[in-house]
Length: 522
Ligand code: FAD
Ligand code: SIN
Image: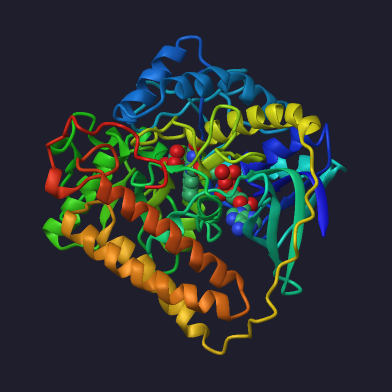
């Protein structure tokens, strides 16, 4: 058994921000499914939104966030995160993160993305997440009270039966194929997103919604799962399954056109290519369906080649390797599942509804995003809440009385499966059904059908789960099923189209009965 004051599950921006602060006050164990840096943070391109320009204001960033959230944001969460942004950025920079500046001056080179009324996004070229993640990993590796367990897949939270408190987690060591017990005074879920629930996604392979599923099984409240954001422009290419083309490219004037060469966004929204993400994703989906095309094109060739190479170096080089010179030709793109706006209900201290359990980052639902996340607000939220949660957890630590002696994992009655194909088949089935039936455009009929199918797969996999020795694939499959079920349930409950949830049976009829965050554990 491993014991620590703080058990942090996840090593992205949220988990590492928490860990670095908590390690000043106690021992920290971090679990991650693969190598430490792997996760959505690593792939973030556009940047991090914050008010750093004297001409910008908190009020303006707040207004843009509330507008994107379609009336379902919690204004207290919005103010909290936005007002703490500049200090959080300052701390990140002090830790070694570099953001691009205008020439040799000390002013940041601010980018613009959809839904922002002005340029306010700090970035490091088009690989902001890698810059942040590499720095945080370096800092965490240098902190001695932090022990990192790579290739450890958390399976379930450990609940103290008498008190209902969370006292750690069980995790599968991929190397030795054994389930280990991690006991902790405070457990933090920082497990990131759930894009892998869908067939097409911009997300890292680790984004299977594990934290949300674990918290749900333990009885924590989950909210707003119907609001899954689809990014409008992910590369369409057989060799590259989930490569994002940043929205910042549209911020620099890139246009969306059909394969027949027609620009279509002005017909959908006055802000055209810079309309909110849900509008752009739906417009692309509609154009593809109308024209029978597999993709649309994103064209930045109007910009000078030097500018494109300097501003989007990662995208330029990767696409050149694939035979596309973006300075001369348009990029084939499609929408794909990108960000989970719902998640584990957590307050502005990162506390969940379960004692001794915190949730931060993309797996949490603080109320910042409402029905639709404003671009580049998620790195900011993870940073601010990672810090706020650590402050609170450190204060709580001396008050935690543990008489926990968690039982070891029992898999004596399980055997090694010779039917792994059942697991891979169910993976494909869940992801395909979510893409086809619970995607960008939904309907009551599709949702009902999806619910019947997911119930069936759930039943089949449950039997399998308890009879065979678990593997990372099986753990993740169980979790994507749980998350899919939560998304479908919440989507069925919401009898209106709002923000990211678009149901063709309620198009244009925003019932006043709703407009509220979805019920816990829907
Ligand atoms: P992650 O960085 O995803 O980290 C999750 C961690 O949890 C990983 O270490 C993983 O191994 C671990 N984990 C998960 N499950 C388990 C388990 N069962 N056991 C052990 N460990 C586990 N947002 C912005 O604000 N600006 C952007 O420009 C931007 N660009 C993006 C581009 C892409 C391609 C993507 C996919 C997302 C982008 N986002 C952006 C969203 C943003 O990157 C994420 O919301 C944010 O990085 C999430 O951080 P996190 O710390 O919550 O999770
Ligand atoms: C992007 O760079 O387009 C992604 C930004 C985000 O998801 O916030």
